[in-house]
Each structure stands twice: as C-alpha cells, then as structure tokens.
Image (cartoon, rainbow, N blue to C red):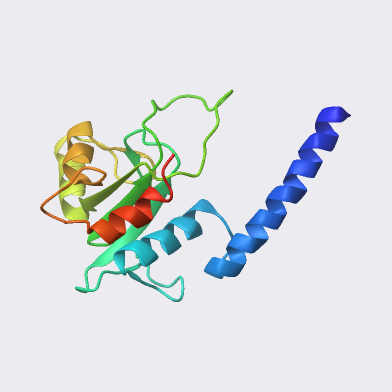
Length: 171
C-alpha cells in the first residue's frame, strides 16, 4: 500500500504543476502542447488556432509552415506526413537508443533543436525504400545537418536571446 499511497500523492502534486503549466500555455500540459508553446515563444512561430491544418502547427514569420515535435529523447525517429508542412522543428532531450523505456526516466528537457526540410527528409526516406509516417527512421547524418541548437548552423542562425531561452529548458 505504501507505493500506491506515494504514487497517488505524487500524481496529485503533478496535477497541481500541470494545472499551473496549463494556465500559462492555455492548453493541456502535454509534451506536444508544451513543445509548441516553447517553440512559438523562442522562434516567433504563429501557432495555428484550430486543429484543421493537417500536420501544420504554425508558421514562421517568413510564412513557411512548420510541424513542431518535442521528443523527450533523441532516437533518430521522426513522425512524418506525406502531405505535411514545409519544415519540421524538433526539440529533443538526450540521445538514446530506440529501446525499452523500462527502468528509465524521461525528463522534459530540451538538449538540442533540429530544423528539417520536410521534402528533403521524405525524399531521402523514399530513396532508401523506408516508410514515411509514424516513427520514420531518419539517418543520423540528417539529424546532424539539421541541428540548429546547441550547435550553430548558418542555414538557420539562432540568436543569443533564443539560445538563452532554450538553455532554460536544458537537462
């Protein structure tokens, strides 16, 4: 009974924290919604108001469509859509192999940020005969080329102010 009592107490505590987070972001405090909110604040993305835009979470100031993902670990898997956005902005926690989560902890941290050109990733997967959809296996080289934080990437410069904001979520 001790474990059940402790877990129930911790869930009540977590519910209080989630309620406070929800009050800030005005959505449920789930990783997807939190990631959207963080990306919008850091990168000036205008989020879609409804859920009618399939696979599009928002737009950059230059008008390009973006789907935002927050993966609590980086295992080189990416959820993609054939009819998706122009870009995928992916916030990740630490690198980890794709394996069972038993006995592990997955903290909500942002250790790195990646910006993928959707058409290029889809083309690479097609050329390799790989599936496009949930948990698509994206080559490590593409992840490295897409990294915009903490590494500096001239294709998408991250300002010092943006770096400082992202560092607030570091592991």
